[in-house]
Length: 500
Ligand SMILES: [Zn+2]
Ligand SMILES: [Zn+2]
Ligand SMILES: [Zn+2]
Image 1 (cartoon, rainbow, N blue to C red):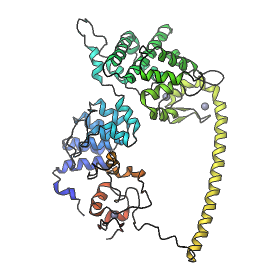
Image 2 (image 1 turned 90 degrees about the horizontal axis):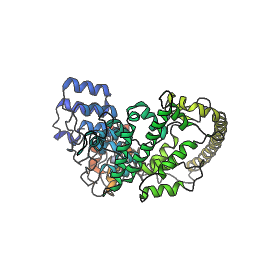
Image 3 (image 1 turned 90 degrees about the vertical axis):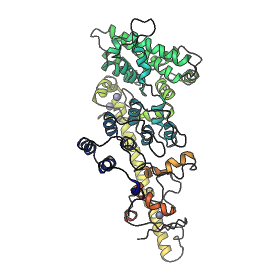
Image 4 (image 1 turned 180 degrees about the vertical axis):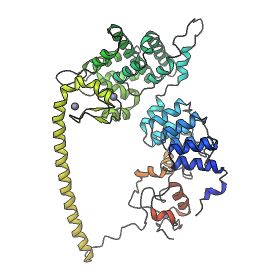
């Protein structure tokens, strides 16, 4: 069966191959193909999508980097629904890919054909981390302004070499003081020129609080980063080896009795207290949240600060973060207690001097937790057994004709969530209550797989009529039966059984 779209496919064979490889091939194959054929990296598929947009939608950071460094236009807008690469990245849920598009100069105000921005689209599908990445993005031009002498200045406020690092720092979503300190340790120029850096940060605070459109998120962020840089620089100057090791140790050192990071807690509270614009609504909210919490109790000032500047969702996600620097998705565990988690060995090494006091206690807790989980599993297995027994009895009754349960079984044979009967545009279409976008075509390969929340779910699926075949093609239905046979095409919403 030929795809309907094939008729107006004006792509060259090389271009067609490029899209196929981005969709299904390895990154190496894509890169080799582009290099060998010199195919245009901004070519368009039948829906006006560029290879960069497809790679962004698939959350493939390496390919996005490759296309961008080979001249792909991050703001290409030939897609039939005016989706941008930033929108596809945000929909993919990949923070790094979203950030990459922003760094490449993606226009955050671009709207699609129904007037939605990338943040609105991402928020709708629940990609809150991507929303926060976009909302918090600080463009490098804002910093570059300070690298040129302004007015009567003989010298610029900020050395050019520092500006990219400072920009990265301001774009951090994780404001953990250890994370900030590790970053400035790796970029010591920030420490050497800390007076200039802190001056620029205070200018940014002022600018964002005094301009007509105040941005207290950015202002509080810059203020806090400036506090950490100032204290770290002072600690470094006092240190006899001129290093930050002592400072970082101090940040990590927990209280003897419970390991609570009292120094960090007091530092963050003090910094918030010193924010110069008392009228800021965000500051007042923070103070209201922090004031009633006793030092040593939850929530910590850090978690409240991170939630305030990133939105609630991020704070929740980072709860399971590295015990040293707070980075989310910390995968390495302390082998002794299996409770402490870290990004890597470096973070574990830094934490050990304080963790070793808590490790045996945590190991106890872990054993208890394991025991509880074991019991829970046994209980569940027991329940499962009982259910099976009940079901067996029911089945027997049905066989004996005492009761019929076959009536409400759906007639439809393909019930997987990515089957042809769930149009892959579902998730996008719902953005607008399913009205304006209901005619929309699929946006990309796996869009249909986001259909998990479909209320009809696995219980009842209705035939979509003659479009089903096309949708099945587009959604790459995994259902074997669906792949080589045709839908009934009745379109009468009576449910369809696949016929050959
Ligand atoms: Zn870490
Ligand atoms: Zn441990
Ligand atoms: Zn069907």
